[in-house]
Length: 362
Image (cartoon, rainbow, N blue to C red; front, top):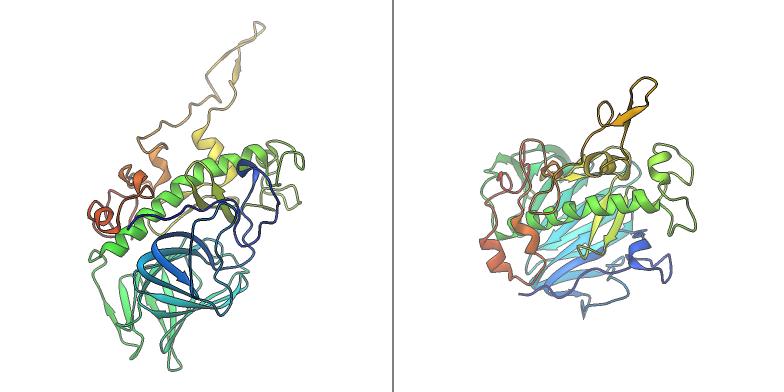
């Protein structure tokens, strides 16, 4: 299968009009935006086709179905649903404050880098109801009546009985029985989801810098340049926490949508780092020269207060993109180029916990 399209200017609502891509934050007012597909994917009876103006939205009561294909769908802010081949789900409600998804068939992987305090996500899986409240990585095999927790904690209710399922455990959605499983025993879908997660995180650094430079408004005519670094942490409408921090943003250099946290940096459950606009400048970009006093004769560059920028890897960014204990693999940069599912899966690192793709599960 070949990738059939890339995300472009808008998500769900093209709220900013015909602004250039480099100036336009992504405004995602609802869950259910399809950010990436490969192969044949349908919403209702319509196959998703390439578009240069907007993305497809899975609206309430609509069904997304894959055949020989896979889909990546944005749910609540910081949460991505990846659906495997011959799988389907129904969007019950798509409000960020109350997102409910019925996983009807097949296999689905949910990556949660962050859950906003006013966002709520509930999944229905046959006889089970799952409430996601924490960062983590969760796999749902519907026909096998099985939910695996690779990282994080899930609250699962089966026939009125609620159970907390921790990392390294799986639950039977028919009997509520909890058992251990081998987190290294993964397949092609797991590996594809991990590579997609790495690309999304890699795109974050340049998008975070773009927000820092141009601010959180739709263009520099609305806000002062570089205000994000100056006003970090404030609660005014000219704060980086106003918009589009804690939101999705289209990265034109990578041709995909990434996530921008606000304030502190966060890590995905795979170990990949998401930079905030303020913190990315401290790590990746050289500040103006600092001068150290030298008596009446003035000062010289260097010394106290001066520091150098971080070096690049072959993937384009410093290894600090990933968890401190491991480095980001550079081999995944060609994932969205036209490789087939089978060939790309063969080149993937084995398992979620592999060291070659950044920090794994703990």
